[in-house]
Each structure stands twice: as C-alpha cells, then as structure tokens.
Length: 493
Image 1 (cartoon, helix red, strand yellow):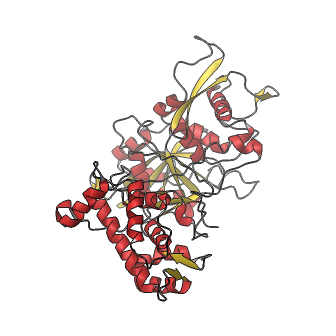
Image 2 (image 1 turned 90 degrees about the vertical axis):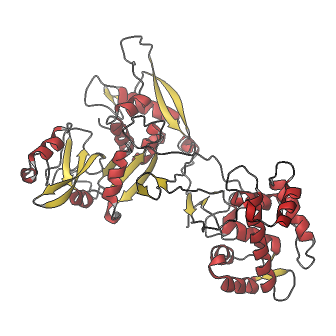
Image 3 (image 1 turned 120 degrees about the vertical axis):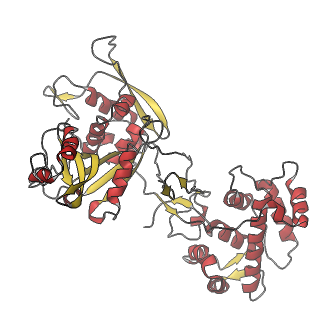
C-alpha cells in the first residue's frame, strides 16, 4: 500500500496493521464483498466510534487524477479495499480533508475499539521489552516509526524508511555466544525494503544461534519481515505505539484479554468544567471516577490498567474551524482505609442510621443533604448556608464503594467520622471564632494537618480568590480533593 495527496500516513499505517490479523481485518472489512458476485455498487465497513461499532456504507466511486487514485492505494492495480476503507473513514469523519494529519493510535482505536499507549524510545522505560512481550500475549497491535529529520534523507544507512510505520510482530530472547540477547521482529507493510543491520535475514549473527531455534524463528517470517536486536530497535526508531485490544475485537482463546469499562460524560460550563490544575479553586469540580484494582491477576502480583480519554466528533467539526481540544486527566492514589465491620459499630449509631436511612437501609443524596443540614443547624457557631445537593452528591460518589449511588451503614459511618475530623480542624484553626476561616488560618490548618490536607489545600491555596471560607465549603473542598482517584480536566498550561 502507498499514499499520495493528503498527509494520511498515520491512517495508512493503521490500515496496514489490520492485515496482520485476519479476524480484525474482517471485522472492519466484511467477508463476501466483491465486484462480481451479488455486486450492487456499494460496500459495507465497520468502524468503532466512541463505544460502539458503526456500519458505514459507501459507493464504488473513488477520487482519481490522471487515471490514478489520489489518496491511499495498493501496489496491485486490481486491489481497492484499502481505498474504499479510506473513503468510509472519510465519510465517518465528514470529508477526506478531515483526515489530514493524525496519529496511528487514532486509526488503531477506530479499527479495533482498543486502547492505545505510546512511548518515546529515547526515553523508553527500563521494562519496555517485558511490556512488548505482555502485549504480544494479549494480541495487541504494535507499530513504530522514525522521525523525519531531513527532507532529502528518506532512509537510514541500514535501509529503514523514515516517517514510515513498521509493525512489531514478535519478540524473543535467544542464546547468542553464551549470552542472552533480546530480539524484536519487525514488518514493513510495503513488503519491499528491509533492515540490513545485525540479525537481518542474511547476517552472520544467526550462525551462532542453535539451529533448531534459528529455523523456528526464521521460518515463520512473512514478506517484508525481519529481526533486529532490541538495542538497535531503541537506537534506530523514535516512537513506539501499542493498541491493546478489547474482548469484542479479540476473540482467539490463546490470547489473554482485557476487561473494559466505558464512562460517558462531558465538561459543562458552570457545573463540571473546573479547568486544569492552574485553577485550584475549581479543579475539584471536574468529573471524578474511582477505580478499584484487584490483586488477583493470575500468576502476576498486582494488576495493570490503562486509561484513555476520547473526544467525540472533533474531525467532523474541522469544517467549522474547530479542532481537537487540549484535555487530559490526573490520577491520584486513594489511601488505604481500615473500615469496621457492621457488627463492630456501636448500637446507638446503628439505631440512628436505621432511622435516617428509611426502609431500604441506605442513604441517598437528598437524604444525606437533609441529614447534614440538620446537623449543621445545631452548630450555631458556624456561619454556613448548609450543604448543597451537589455537595451531598459528591460525598456519596466518594464514599460509595459498591457503586449503587447510596451510602450503606458502614459507608455512612466513614463519612460521619471524616466530617467530625473536618469539624475539629475547622474549629481549631478558626482562631478568631468568626465561624469562617481566612487565608492565614487555612495556612495554619495545612501546616498542622500535614499530609492529610496537602492535596486539597494545595488546590485551594494556588489562587485563593475569596478572602474567607465557611465550614461547608471547607468540608466540600477537603472531601472532594483528599481522595480523588481520577479527575479529568484540561492539562496544565
């Protein structure tokens, strides 16, 4: 395959990677479509768009100039599936022009529904080889590329093409002259130009590898495929990308699969758009999600997880002068807490909790708001207008471990103890007993509290716009900022 016209090399690389896995390819390009049998002038393609597979139908007209295809095309004169797939992708995104410029990761995701991660190889993590091995075990798609540094130099000295995406198809450790050597198997989707350095097809290094192992590694190679040492891989290439496939795209039983969860949401001005961490007074109102990882992941200790943040329909909006927004997320570790069992709670609290929670024995947002405001009304020394529904909802979200949107007896007990602690802090450092804290009093509270309040008060002190803060605001700030797990927002400027 090759390209012309628009800058769509990123899309070409993603399309080429599909050819490495028939299951993935035919999920996107359905079987049984041809120009002969039952031909009706249209073709169907499946694209993954923001959480679901979408059927895209295109006709058989393709853009040409001087009798040649303008954009993505195959070296074979009678092969058109890649050009038709590109047309379907252009239709899904509004136009061919909308495809100009992008990353292979984006194409990977739209063709597989996977989650991508990428690495700058000049700053590669020490365990990258292990990461690649695990990715291969999971059936992930991988590619890498070399940055173009000169318009006149299209290839390296050892025949690697710059600005071109190579697929990573294998990784292996071999015994070479008594030492363990890490090897990476690459594939040029053009199938023509191959690496000529160490461990290439005709290099001497293979003469020092056990013949049975050598034959096993070299017999499985396709056209355009070659081995190279992992050190040469790190030295020669610039960027490495992995697309981790989800269960609906990866069906083979031999692969270990990811479990996936999709959350939909948005940033709404005045409600959930808190800005980046340069705006500490509002950062906490950004959407927050809690993730719990189980340690039981087979033979391995611990658990691996990936996060990805999507923007919907941004390529479609290019014709209106819009482009991708600068967005991001921050990840925080939630401190481990010791929670009592229900049997260990005192009977007085149990009876109170049963009275407050009603028949379902759990406290919802409105019930919590009512309870907190009744409690606050008894503290005449505090200047407060009470807890808002949004404050109560945030507290429920943070304490709700089983995800049902309500607080059980144990969860309510944890929240009650937290609020008691917040109240003690507030009263202790409300030095003038005004019922509200000024900036100086907040600083003293931070110094005294140490790590417990380092995160929330750093958020608040960065740009303290209000001279005073009352207890309900203090409680809201602390409860939302002290234990976030993931908070989505535009990144730091």
